[in-house]
Length: 566
Ligand code: AMP
Image (cartoon, rainbow, N blue to C red; front, side, top):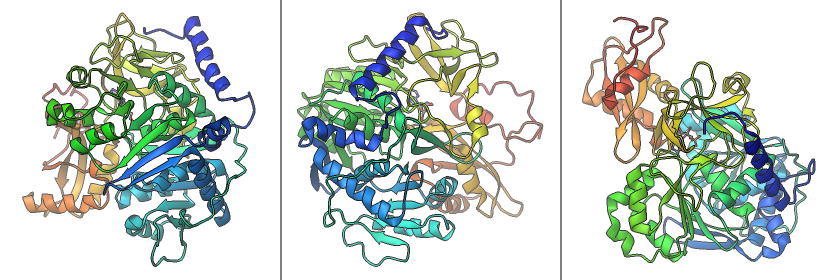
């Protein structure tokens, strides 16, 4: 229910995270190196021979690594980076496909005490460069196939001193580039982990807002009890599970629950380094005997489109728990999943900034299809009046707020104190989402409270698209908004005002699109460019994207009184 922290809420908060800390053997004030906890602690508990990673590449090649392999390979990467002079606090970017080295490096960088900066390898030049520049990244791990983008970025980034290429036989390298071949190099049994305290920075995850460049949400080693506990309780992970999280570690779901959650619980996880393909996904679920599956509404909608028959052709009886995150989970998807897999997808809600699931339909609890569920025990959530920031009564729509204090909440945005401070009002952390809560305490997602576009669970900041558009010589100004899409929920649509002397045409639209393609990730690419004579603006000259968005969605545009007249 929408209410301030109750005594019972605070008690369960203390109990849940404290139980997690106890199970993890974390003594107050003692070092808590996240990397060590994901590998060495599991080995020390006698489960070094238990499979950690069941990996399959896009061409069908497979690899299997146990926790001992994970421990040694992450040690190898930590000592390799230390040899280059990388140390605690330095930012190290992972610009890799979902190859095994990505996972080993994530753990190794944390052991070293450096800060991991995972970025989607699909990012275009502009997306990569702005994030490396913002973080002042010192080293980057990549594959040969991405070297072109990395080399172009380095021309403008003198701080990026080391590029580590992880493919075997990395070929001709340039100064500042170095090959790392884990299959040949020594795999040390031990590496002295950095004595990280709970507040030592661990991961920088870049996320998009309406204005300004993407921001680096900074997390800490002490977040561990949150991911460990929510993976165990909300995703129902048990020691002998085979778990599959579909997310790429460029997105927070791919680290919090694609690395930290399962491995801190000593659970085997599956990684498929390939794009979506319904047949292949069902084959993977069947072949690996996946028991717990964490997916996203866009993927579920794609599976629904392929039909139930395809699912029935596979033996999916190992599946025990299904969960979803990233976008609203439509009630139809819940009903379809019940009919197809004999169990519902459980919606979970959280963000880059929260670091862990904060609202969920817990295993075994009754599900109201279409609802995100209830606050995870230990999380105090409320729907707030957007002006007074006081909890609203049940049924009213307001801004979703959370009381700070859970272990994995971001500690800041990298180098951007004012953006961080702007996230808090009257002791509440503001999520930027609108929601309502019903009389039973179930939360319902309504929409974003800003202009950020959620396409297939991937947040796209309009600013980034608009900045890339402005680089084109014909573009005077532009606005990027979400337009409805049956699979991705929304896709990016750009409205463009041309400079004098340029005329709208299909050729020009294609040319603009091609120029964007190199700069942005495929997900941020507009699906449509519409040339318009002007954009709706406030009297102070700010573009009012909501008016354009409402038009795309066939919704009323809201109050227009503050708009400038053409
Ligand atoms: P990100 O920080 O990229 O993980 O995106 C977080 C945002 O995705 C949230 O602020 C929501 O707007 C959206 N989101 C995440 N989970 C859900 C969910 N279960 N239902 C609706 N929207 C969600």
